[in-house]
Image (cartoon, rainbow, N blue to C red):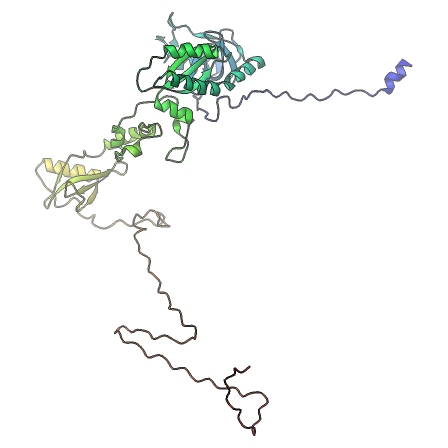
Amino acid sequence: MAEDEKKEQPAQTPAPQEESKPAFRTDDQYGPRAKLHSFNWLGDIPGGFADSDIVEVTFKNTRKAYYKNSTHIPLEIGDMVAVEAMPGHDIGKVTLVGLLAERRMAKHVAGSQRGRTVVSNDQEVKRVFRKARPADLERYEEARAREHDTMMRSRQIAAKLGLNMKIGDVEYQGDGMKAIFYYIADERVDFRQLIKVLAETFKVRIEMKQIGARQEAGRIGGIGPCGRPLCCSQWMTNFVSVATSAARYQDISLNPQKLAGQCAKLKCCLNFEVDAYVEASKRVPPKDVRLETADATYFHFKTDVFKREITYSTDKNIAANLVTISAQRAFEIIALNKEGEKPLSLIPEGSDKPKEKAAFGDILGDGDLTRFDKKKKKKKKSKPQSAEGSAQPQRRKDGAQDAPKKRRPEKKKPRPGAGDGDAPAAPTNEPQE
């Protein structure tokens, strides 16, 4: 009987297990402002020549650090790891592994020998503990959820203490035992009392870090005048000083309102193309050189460094009798002036003919700077006629008026029912139907 009952019972199929979705986000751990990291161009070298125990780990925003994978855990770019910290441990994302990470680390530690990093005794590399467990990530997310509230409360505490500083961001350690406060201040601030109050309020270890205006703009984000998101919030991690000479090399107007970014500093994009302008300016004559001809003396007016064309003016202060020549022709005239000779004109003989525009160059005419100067002819509006339909007298060019046209008399229609022999009806003032 027991065997029959077993046969009658249908076989129970195991219920499909739903894929467990983690409560944390692994695709975008650090917000929408993703940073472009270094491409590991040494990662595909076979034979283990590009292997190394050094790992680059990125934390919130732009903070990076280098750790040693002493236990040889198989790590890949994008893994969340628990690393050594003082005190406790921190949670970060692996952004670079192998020999390239070791070379990047050489910029931050002392000494190098045959391309291999030699770490000094006073600056030891911290270790990678393990890959982050679900419990570690849950605790990490709980710590991150407190950052905004902590920042707002810390600003109120700093205002009560009368400190001339602005706390721009707060970053908790992965285990929640330490908090880093990023602040901006124009002058030196004594925040010893602030650290004591913050430690008593939040029950964590406090660390203060001063940042500049560019770092603050990168953390806040925004849209630049070019219509794209700010470079400091998208891909820039290292900020280089920008000088006004970068604008002079590119012949940009020295207008502070246009040269300054949202951080009230000079725009970082001024350095992007300045090297190309510096190299191109070496192939054109200097701006302080005057060109002597038989009829006049020409001064520099403007230069197109990429086309190698220079425009000269007969007046030093205003644009007068502008002549555009090539850089090669300018060098020829400079050589003739050094020998004491003066050419007849800046333009060489046989090149007075204007250049023909290519048929495929500007089909729509959008590149013409004078396209907005063309005046459109106004159409003459016809004068409206009167309600009766009579034509109004028109003025001639000599000032006389034309006589109005006479209207033809309308024929009266005979009344219905009236015959030829009947007498005509007496006129009445009543309107006819």
